Each structure stands twice: as C-alpha cells, then as structure tokens.
Length: 392
Image (cartoon, rainbow, N blue to C red; front, side, top):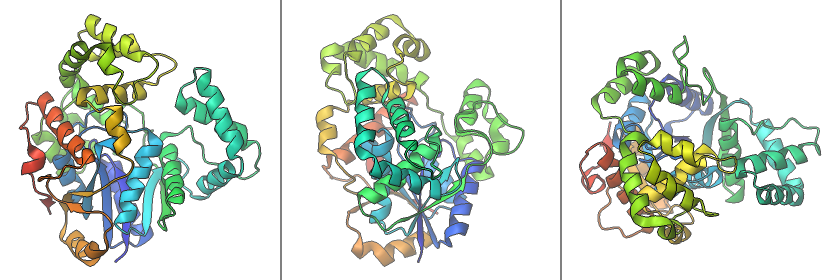
C-alpha cells in the first residue's frame, strides 16, 4: 500500500483542505492518507478553534485514513522543529510521500534552495547570527541570510517570504537531515492567501478568514467555505480562542512573577518583565498583545511564549524532548486499519491509542495542554485518558 503523509492543523477543516487532501491522493496514487495533526495548541501560538477529536472527525470525513497527533512540543514550536517532528512521524509510519501546499507549486525551487544553502552554509549561518545580534527577529534574520546567498546561484529559488513555502522548505530540509527516503510533492495553494482575513466570493477561504468571521458574526456565514460534514461538526462544538483563555493566562503571569516566567520555554532577554507589567494593566488579550509587541518579536513568537506560560512548559522539559517518542492515534478509517496491520510490527515508535499510564514527558505535556484547553470552554478534564481513537 502506498501511504502519503500530510501535515495539518485543520483549524477548521475547509474546502481548501479538502482540495489538498484529494490532490495528495491523486498525485501520489496513494492508497492511504496519513494526517499528522496538531493537538489543542498550534504553531502560531493559538488554541485550536475546536478540540482535537472534533478536528479528527473532520479529517476522517474529508478522506484521511489515519490521524496522528503532533505532540505539543512540536506543534507549538518554530517552523524548523514543527517540520522536523512532523516528518519524523511520517517517516516512522513508512510514508512514501509527503505532500504539502505551497505558493510555488513546484518542488524544483525548494531543492535549489536547499542545495544553495548547503553550498553557502558558512555565510548563511554567519549572516543569521549577525542579524539576530542586531536585534532583528529570527524569521527576518533567516530571510536576510537567504537573500544574501541567493546572489550566488542562477537557479530559481523558492520564495521563503511566503508562509506555506517556509513550511514546505523545512519539511524537505528535515527529510534531508534525518536521511529519510520520503519523497516531497507540492500542490499550488488555491484561493485566498494564508493570512487573508476577508472572505472571498469563491468557495475557498483561508482558515484565518473563517475564524475571524466566526467570532465576528455566527457559524452560518462560513458554511459556503466548508464541506457539509465539517460545518456540521463545527456547529456542534464550543469555539475556543485566546479571549476565553486570557483570564487564566493573566492569573498565571501575575501569580508566577518575572522570576518564574524566565524559566518558561522561549522566554528570553527580559521579556518576562514586559509580560508581567502588561498583565497588571490590561484586561483583554488584544490590549495585552498591543502592550507587549515589538520589532524584535513577531506576534506569533509572542503568542507561542504565552502558550508555554499557560501550560507551564519549561525550558527543562523542552530539553528532554528532542524527537517524537510515540505515535498518538486520534482517528482511523477501515482503510487505515488495514495499513496499520501491515506495518505495525515494523514501527520504530510505540503506538498509543489512549494516554493510559505512560510517563513520557512529551505525552504528559499533551495531557496537560488538553486539560488547560478545556478550562477555556468549560470542558471535561482527563479526556486523553477517556477518549479512544475515532473510528470512521
């Protein structure tokens, strides 16, 4: 059986995701689609709009065969670690292909970019370090270094200012680093831009635009942009946001104080004092973010720090988690069950269907993040112990 892997958040699952999933299957002639999906907190430092089991149901209804959770340590990390954790899971599941959406729509520019960086590695890393020392944010430092070395080749390179291209680049870079045989395939992104907040006239909108509309009006306004099964599931569940979780975040910041905040993952250079002052003075999440934003830190990077504060994710815990240590099964189709039976004895990582008595630090973070997420929507605690994989 040919297995093709995709890396997703489905926040929520919309028509663009359905197009990507179907095209991934068609282009790779896949028998099985394996989705590695972020749990309750996402790469941009946000809570998912609905819980991970609801999004798993959306994925299975859309045609995925296996949904595997990307652990918290990777789903809330910057792009290189997010991508590496995802690729390691897909490689462990013996995927032949990884298929990602991109603004490029072609693999060649990504390959050229990787080759150019490898050839000019010393200059590339030196430029990044120099930019960071000047107070430039890490994503902008990468962009500057990339532009610097791009003058050393005549080959067409991937535009790494685009969000989907950035992730696609890191998927391919990660596959090289771990010497995986997984083959990359890309699909040109359709419809609106990744960050577009306005809803378009056609049926493909960005997840950002859908979420904005949901919180500004009501669920019915986004029906056009989602498959019926996904829309019906979205209607049935409470919608989570930073606005719901901010009281818990504010309490945590004020209780811990700067000294304890400095121990949290990603907290650097005294920003804990800015967080502490802002929490004292601001009663809403938007006001808090406006108070702490700066040129040095992107909005996304700040939100990731805040997620780690909320969940108590410390630097010491992060240091223990270098790569995925288990395969957490969230959902499966009959086709997926057949595939798992065929490869189960060869899997290099244990397959986990419920949390059980596992003491793995990464899995403990997943359990904790679920319980904290549920506080914002007045949900039930302990769901990782009680919820079996969703069966289609």
